[in-house]
Image (cartoon, rainbow over all chains, first blue to last red; front, side, top):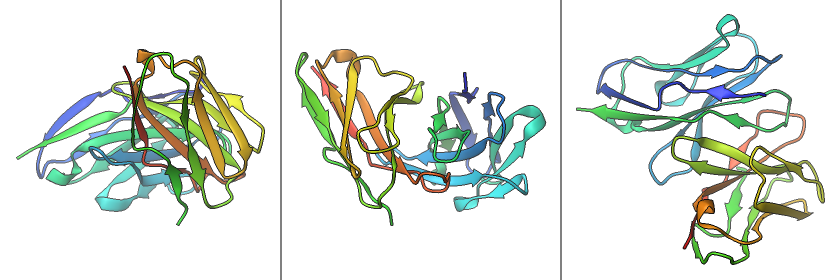
Length: 113
Length: 113
């Protein structure tokens, strides 16, 4: 079955430190990949997405993600985390245009001063 | 901007009640989706619809049904609410044939007592 795995349920980083959130998807042709963020009490906000082309994609709020087909991964990175980045992050994949979006379990990010 | 509106932000219902969660989108999207979000489980797809009067089961359809009588409205129905259906419910819509336009509502937090 098509699936997305986020191995880390909860991560804590210090403010100013770098961040990498992991995401792996099950094998499938031409995945379309997304990262969403959800702040407490808020809705889902799209951070970035990968459809094709350059495997390093830039998103909002200083985030980037790299698609690695050989590893079936789409990890999210940020060079310097801000306290306001504390939130839950979801990786998602869709395998056909307009089809159903499949989400990972989410990674909760805490930022310590 | 596309808007997906969920009629209730918070809802409290009694066990055994029939519950309707309403979702309306204003951009003529063909596809609509219902997810439930639970801690540690991410977002799981309950049902989706590709067109009026069409519906398909997602990953966790048990205990739920849906209705799509008009293109802009997609209703989630809990035939007989149970406490294990206490959750956050998110509606989304997308344009057929594209992965570029998934839009989420703000969610309905349902508590079944």
